[in-house]
Image 1 (cartoon, rainbow, N blue to C red):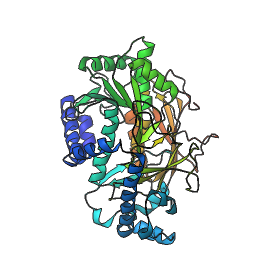
Image 2 (cartoon, rainbow, N blue to C red; image 1 turned 45 degrees about the vertical axis):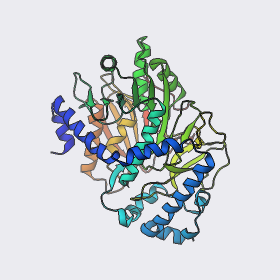
Image 3 (cartoon, one colour; image 1 turned 120 degrees about the vertical axis):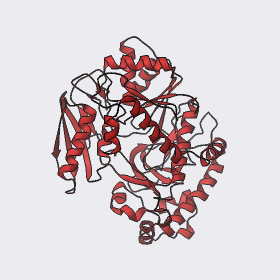
Image 4 (cartoon, rainbow, N blue to C red; image 1 turned 180 degrees about the vertical axis):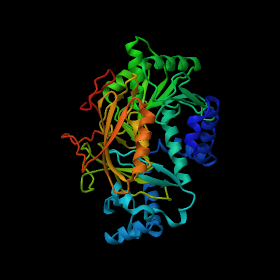
Amino acid sequence: MNGEALYRRAPVWMQTVLLNAYALRLHRQRYGRPFPALQAEWSESEWWDPSQLRAWQDRRVTEMVRFAHDHVPYYRRRFAEHGVRPQQFGGVDDLPQLPLLTKEDVRRARTELLASPHARHLLHGHTSGTTGSPLGVWYDRPMAVANNAADWRQKGWGGLAQSEWCGLLLGRVIVPAGQRQPPFWRPDYLHRQLWLSSFHMNDRNLDLYVRELRRRGIRFLEGYPSTLYILARHLLRAGERLPLRAVFSSSETLHTIQREALGAAFECSVFDYYGLAERVIFAGECERHGGKHVFDEYGVAEVVDDAGHPVPLGQPGWLVGTTLWNRGMPLIRYRTSDVSTRVANRCGCGRGLSRIADVATKAEDIVVTPDGRFVSPSVLTHPFKPFSQILKSQLIQDAEDHVVVKLVATAELGRGQRAELVAGLRERLGDGVRVDLVDVDDIPPEPSGKFRWVISLVPHDCAVSWRS
């Protein structure tokens, strides 16, 4: 029996023990002596003058490019093909000389992107994929620590200290979907996090969520915009408020209507941040909420056109990121599927970190189940993550009890994997929802250029116009 199956069958007390054992494993990866030292460095460097930050980036990115050439087979070959001479590389301004790295490049390269001295003891992660096509990535422990430092910088800007509790509305199946009675949450005592189930959010259960958050005195929440919005809409419909100190949102586009609802329901500011499983860009909001500060010590962010050339200030373009930390699988000039704009003037907060405007990602809908539960689209990405054979996917809910999954997949996606995918979706949607897989040749974007990964044709109270 694997760990997830054991967790699902365990009683509540044992699930709490298993969750905290998992938290301990993560703690060993993300903390330790390097973490407070890096936090202290970054608490100073965020106030550096932009020219000082750029000089630091120049040194760091030059080291990374030369390391990649010397130790990563993929870059040695690609640099030779493009006439790149790393010994002449001088910093951030030279990045446009290097070829862009696409998701498909990463998929094809596989182990060729791993650095030979760092191939052992790497940590593995998956992207959710803007077009529903997951991607496996590898990273080393210094990258894990830097990612944690970036996350805590954002939390600190919102006032959250490591000694305080935070409620989480994210995508893991913390409570088995078939459970009908509370508790619909599990505590992580090590990191002071209350994991709230994103799969039991109907009106009856949400009253219990609010009661538990009040009982524990929790003053911070983190989640996907859609899951947080479900809770906020519930409070507003009931004429209630749940005063908090800050709400943190990520992983989806935060619509204006969602930000306003969260602010009204929780009577606090919303700190929206942007990060990637590929770990090349991290950006977050300070107390001024004037766009997002790029965490320049974490990675180099570019805004480019289709050909990879920098676009003028104020003009939208593709976000491209280069790691400054991950030597296990260094991603250099990795082109995301997200669009943003560089902000020219320095933020009124006084920090020297560069800024980008809000990031436009995929547009998608909330699913409603026959038993009245609202399910965030982001939590439905998890069953897809193990399957790199899925090139594109799209979920269409045409009835409360029926979801069609369109797949563009390779021949290697076999019957057993398809059954595993359906089981993962039904675990999250419940046995009352039928899931049908349909193979298609392609899934085009909307006329606007946006890709809708989840489309719900069922009207409900938590719907948000993807056109906004």
